Image (cartoon, rainbow, N blue to C red; front, side, top):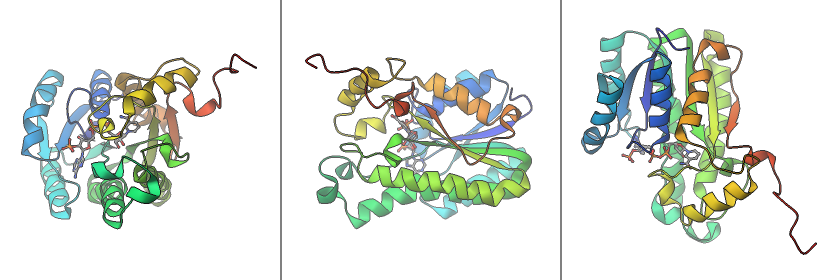
Amino acid sequence: MLENKKIIITGIANKFSIANGIAKSMSKNGAELAFLYQNERLLKRIKPIAEELGVATLVECDVSSDDSIDEAFSEIKTKWGKVDGLVHSIGFAPTDQLEGDFTEVTTREGFKIAHDISSYSFTALAKAALPILSENAALLTLTYLGSIQSLPNYNVMGLAKASLEANTRFLAASLGKKGVRVNAISAGPIKTLAASGVKNFRSMLTEYADRAPLGRTVTTEEVGNVAAFLCSDLASGITGEITYVDAGFNTSAMSSIPKNN
Ligand code: NAP
């Protein structure tokens, strides 16, 4: 599905990362991959993952810095010339923003950081990649249902994900004439490093499996397979879309009628 495609993947923190599930599926489907990692500390953790998948291009890129983004893409340009896809799998808000009552805990600084790292960075990476994007390139980001429905503790990340989804549609409109597609996957909750920053995440998983039509949560591999499809030419007619990979949770208002009724 992805033979002869060169795809950049961001956001692998460890083997549990959604981006790792995406990398595994894309590699299995024939893509050549490059990994962007935030800093030296991360390099040690992603090296074994890169070795396992035969990924030789590892480039440092902290998305909070325009200089870091510029340096990363000039390195990719030198190594690869053209790029056929980019996966943005990055999200961050300070921990104190992800615990407690939304009105009480949300601060201007927390709001700014969450939106900068979790949403603006997608635009920033798209801008940096544009000069080397091939004609049928595909960009992809990862979002969550908290963008359209409130839930405890997710707080300002919900606002940042709403921004990211709008970002997906505006980038799709902006880049469509060049043949570039831009999509998002809204993934169900998965136990990863970023997710463990959200208070009571474990209880969320149980509640989730109870209500989802498939009666379970999803895996990073399942998200990875849809990511591979969306970045392939099989999805050539799809852009600006939010695709749910959540065992159907977003389609179900209630799992069963309470027993005493
Ligand atoms: P993860 O493994 O912790 O990945 C998050 C990644 O973002 C990490 O690699 C992290 O690097 C990176 N990152 C944060 N700040 C960065 C920066 N300034 N520059 C570059 N990279 C930075 O968690 P994940 O759950 O797979 O998250 C991936 C994406 O999926 C996020 O957008 C998340 O919101 C979304 N998502 C997750 C779930 C879920 O339940 N897990 C559900 C739906 C959507 P560091 O480790 O160095 O901070």
